[in-house]
Length: 365
Image 1: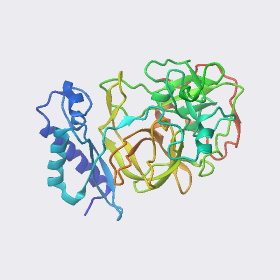
Image 2: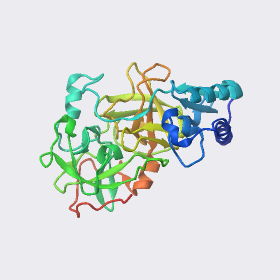
Image 3: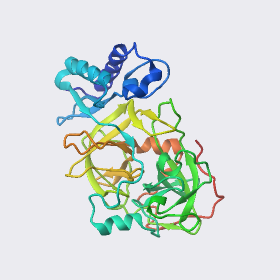
Image 4: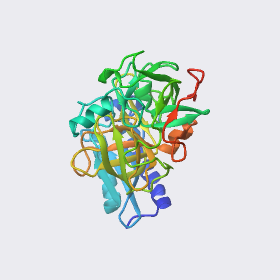
């Protein structure tokens, strides 16, 4: 049967209230034991590691998307109750543990050797897909180039460009330290803006920018494997997408859920597990996963017209219809808004030099 988008949102809200009633007796301070995240003082879906969203159907309607971890009895109980209530209108998937993709998995996973080497080596001019990171992080991916206050910046994840203890002005290197990058020899710029991630608080984006050194150039528009980046767009679900990342290179997938709220993402020690709202889910369409450790920060774009849709930040090694794991994205327009930046896209020139600027300026938290 399914619902239209607005009806599906209403059903999602009702399902969240239902789960809140089911788990109302739990102690939110023990959320880590339930596979979830501590947010506020009232237990809810995020407390037990349940994410709810919208799953696209072939006829253009939506079903209720339920994502939960195996091995968490309370989440399984809630999933069973929701299945009884919604039947075929529930798209339920167990995800395994969802992690902010730390970098990196072994170089060259699923790739011809030459492609992996190219993405993990020192490369100038800069381009999307290359290994990059804060000097205190192993490695992630240079997702795209953005403009802030007239200057070109690198876009990636907070956990790639900031890590656990980074501060504005810290050096960023290409390749990332795990791939041999050092400061100052491989410095490409400095951390210039970020969206804070705080333990115990909900989040919507895992994003940061680095201002480039004045003498660097970048293939800011034309270097995406799908062609020129044409801008950004929203997704409805079911779209074919692609990305290029430091570890798995060029991969293709399909959007399997949107507007996922309460997505539990494990950031390890320090931040712990954070719950993200409004997220996009992608499943790989081939035999290999859409992403792996080290692909964090990749820009995901529509295969048909190279419009950016999301910033890759997390994934699981299990779950999904093919058992190859699932990948999660921050909606790109939310990322751009929170950082107060715009994408370099068609019409901005093939190769762009970073203008001289006061180092360390940029978007604030």
